[in-house]
Amino acid sequence: MKKLFTLLFAAMGLTAMADNTVTVKYDFENYKLDSKGKYYEWFEKNADDTENNLWATGNAGFAMTAGNAPAADYPSVAIAEGYDGACVKLETKSTGFLGGLVKMPIAAGNLFIGSFDSSAAMSSAMKATNFGKVFDKKPLKFFGYYKYKAGEKVTDKNGKEIAGKVDKGQIYSVLYKNKDAQGNDVVLNGTDVLTNENIVAIADAGEITDVAEWTKFEVAFDYKKNVIDEEILKAGGYSLTVVFTSSVEGASFIGAVGSTLYVDKVELVCEGEESSAKEFTDKLVVQLGDGEPMDPLSASIFVTDNGDGKYTLTLPNFMLGEGPEAMSVGTINLENVEGTEEDGVVVLSTKQTITIAPGDDESIGWIGPGLSPLPVTLYAEMKGEKLFAKITISWVFDIFVTFGEKISTGIDCIVPGVVEQPTSVYTLDGKKAATMQPGNVYIVRKADGKTVKVIK
Image (tube, rainbow, N blue to C red; front, top):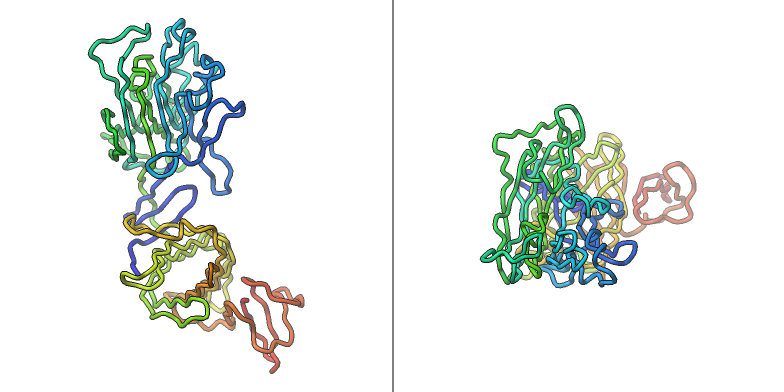
């Protein structure tokens, strides 16, 4: 079993890695039409599967001149053919007669973290874009994939061609303090998103020019001499924006109709915290259904004490077998596992339905993420530097994973199975139980009169 990192923790697209960094991922797979069905909107998913309206576009402003145009004709559009899955297509569009009349002849396609005030779009377009949402991590690096094609003719706000000028796209991220020296709220807009005195760091991907194939951009955040105040960071005193646009001067209504930027698989690598996860290394044995157990392999499991009587258990880079014929499954994350202590031994037990996460080696074709959510049962005992864990993954066949050696706790681990010849079965609060449900702990009186605790 490969041991490639110290901890993988997945929630809301955050992944903690071995080099003590946290990666925030945006894959743009979550999008929908607005409430009137006119244009696309993007969102992220919170841990409880609710929508996090992190992203904004200028689509609402374009709607004022779009008439009955379909969503596909707006500047910011979701399309299925991305680098991997869906992606964002940003295209500079003409705003027609009405837009030209008010010297706003184009609308650049854009997507950014923040909000858009459509009521201010006609009177002060620059101030209609409000950049940034609270961010409690220190970003270090910014990367993703893009394609770009410039439009044929760059025009100014009067609709006149600017001879010899070539349009460019723009990709950047900004971290800034969201309070000024007097404690007043600060929100960047189109007039100062790259110049405001509260800016702490900028990651600018540089000139985005024509490239027909998906191309990776990668840039570090430039903090200059600025230092992050950790107390302010944890208190929500910093905001971050990520910005993509099809015309670099689109906010000034300078650009080429038809300039198109595609963006996908964007990630922010941030400074992580010291992990509280404890690593246990021992022998791991896998058994498939009723087959013979496979040869033991050395493996690591990580257990994090969440501080509320619950734990997170992670089995990273899980494989069935080893060598060239091994089946690369992925990373098993079991969160909010109930823990109880008995005679100095912490007993963990849970039954969850989870989606298996990929391992951290991108060159490996992990099969787990492509499977539907699978039921997983855990029973574990933890004492000092020792961990015993029994994990059952219910797939086409049951996969039984045994890690370490059992620690004596007076609890028999039966996954799957039943206690031999029980005469009476009780729940932990003393109520008699007719049957034992998988994943639960019971008190069982055997035929010889002895009582034991068991987990079904």
